[in-house]
View 1 (tube, one colour):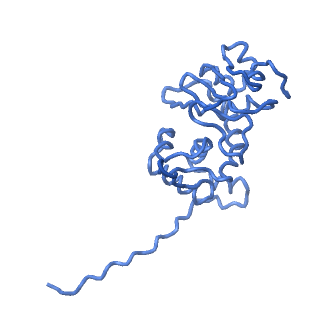
View 2 (tube, one colour; view 1 turned 120 degrees about the horizontal axis):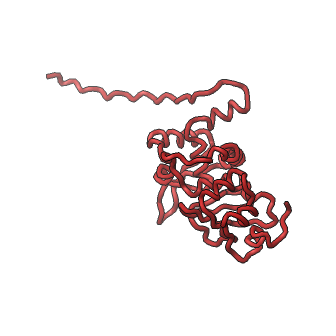
View 3 (cartoon, helix red, strand yellow; view 1 turned 90 degrees about the vertical axis):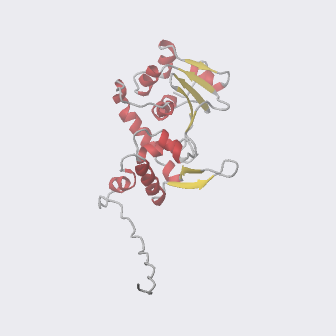
Length: 232
């Protein structure tokens, strides 16, 4: 038996992974180099509501594998769209959140939501749904208001809340579940929310004809009900 000691195998340095690129000197191509992969923009949609844990992201992105989600989050970190940080005790959990550049994708997603809203004419049997997925399509229904604030939206599937003065650089655009202190509450059926998101109905028409309600006593609630003049 040989008495020679086996020398430890030296680890080879990891090769940097080169992301696929369109290799075109074009702003659109450069943007798609960063966010054109499947699932990336939907992860941004989730993070527009604020920091989220990996497990929460996975739960609200039905259909994505754990490997793909981890890979996309890593790409978003490397691309400067998101950061990973640990919350202080007692939470002590790692969360992902958007950077300023990542939040700058709000107008892009809002435009996509408006463009894609007509495709919501029929819900397929395989379609998952989360209440907060209506936040971006509904944002344009609140354009031009004289008063700003937080609107809690109550649907058949649950609640979410959004800011009527959403600013890409201002942090959270919408949030999950009820708001702590909403300025107004909008109560409507999901099919009515779909019609409103598709642009087929105005908010005033929805409140007048479709059984929707606005609850609250403040100026924003009054304006949404049509009790106060707006800048329209």
